[in-house]
Image 1 (cartoon, rainbow, N blue to C red):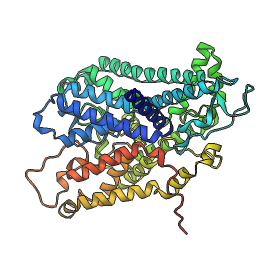
Image 2: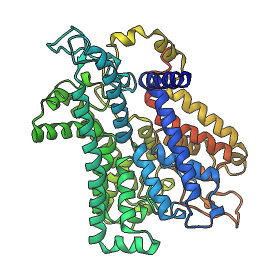
Image 3: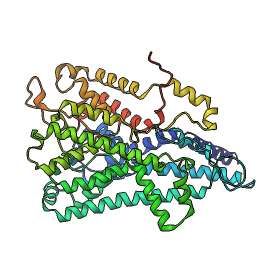
Image 4: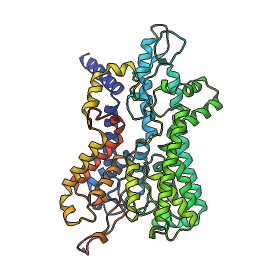
Amino acid sequence: MMIHSLLQSMKYSLRFICQNNPFFVQVIYFTLISFAGYAALKVLKPRVKPNTLTDLDLLFTSVSASTVSSMATVEMEDFSSSQLWLLTILMLVGGEVFTSMLGLYLERDKFDTKGSANRRGNSDYVDIECISSTKSGANSTQGTKVTVPLAEEKDHVEPEKIKSLGYALLVYLLVTNLGSSITIYLYLLLVRDAQEVLKRKGIGFVIFSVFTAISSVGNCGFTPVNENMVIFQKNSILLLLIIPQILAGNTLFAPCLRLMVWSLKKITGKEEYNFILDHPEAIGYKHLMSSRECIYLTLTVVSFIATQTILFCSLEWSSEALQEMNRYQKIVGALFQSTNARHAGGSIVDLSSLASVILVLYTIMMYFPGYTSFLPKDDEHHSKAEMKDKRKRLLENCIFSQLSYLAIFVMLICITEREAMTTDPLNFNVFSILFEVVSAYGNVGFSIGYSCKRLLNHNVHCKDASYGFVGKWSDKGKVILIIVMVFGRLKSFNMKGGRAWKLR
């Protein structure tokens, strides 16, 4: 009897923590799937000799895939097909669409718990202000009053509407990932030169299609080949197929989700979808925006991509990296590169060969959150629950801003890599480290890389590799970047940090 009571107490305590502290839930979630991925990668046999992949490299790769960061310390072709399938699963369950859907189901479970209490009165509705997901993110929606002519005069929404939104998210997840996989697979069947590349590398069409599609929708940036998309830079149609997959999985997720809900409303005729479209703030799901917000967000994304594309074409049109491409291929390649700079991390060129101003622009783009918009949402209107939470506001004032954390991480890595910065300053310079840290923090995956040609003292044993710059760091530096990737994946909880710090 005592054991049963203890188990019940633990159950309710865990439920309370999960429902009221989403940050804690996500930390546990990403920790569990990262270490589970590491254990599975260690058990599965790689394509190369087992001793080639160290435990730290396997853990780093698992965290990178789980946080959809695509930072790499080993070459992708070192992994076997079974390990690539595992990485595909990690990218799927670590992507924003999947994790936000899980969060919504947790909220629905909380609604059901609170709803049962509400039904003891005269209403089947639940309290909107209990939605914890609205408290995080720069563009998240605050609890908003919605007038529904039933029962008590308070914020409430039917659990059935949350269930309908969960169904829409599930359909969206299946359509984007499955549709993208089929599209890439059909392209491979029709284009012979793309087939020859994969046959030469011993990579199957199915694993390449599914891996690349899920990586693109999840905005991870991994591909099963060492060269990323450089080897496909002339396959313009393939690049054009991947671009909408990237946008649908991150920066344009909200507008595409609204389109999906609208489509389901037309197909099913359910009134729940009408409510979701008319009252997105009431639902409390941060990826659900009003039509006006979606329009401004889309215009912002398009303007960012256009700016990057114009600058890229202006400075790199006649560069060595694009010299074998025709005009059409250059334009499509520039568009693909610019789309990836926000969060996806795929690349058709060696980033170290690009002009410095482009690298600086990419650094800025990687820092911007996915829902950066020309029409910022008004953060001054807080729900009653948030205004009452003095401890939360005190914590937001005490913690540092995101720029402060980036500065701290860069300084720590400069300390761990100080010897290499002295002996190999052309590779290990402050900007290269800053670029790598911002890329990891933004979960992008861009890297300037490491080149033996930049060594001051020629080393006959030095060998260029296709993995990122972090692959040449010390173990301590790699561990710090693992923390940066996880911290970056959870950065939505720190969007309001550092407000107490005033520069005068």
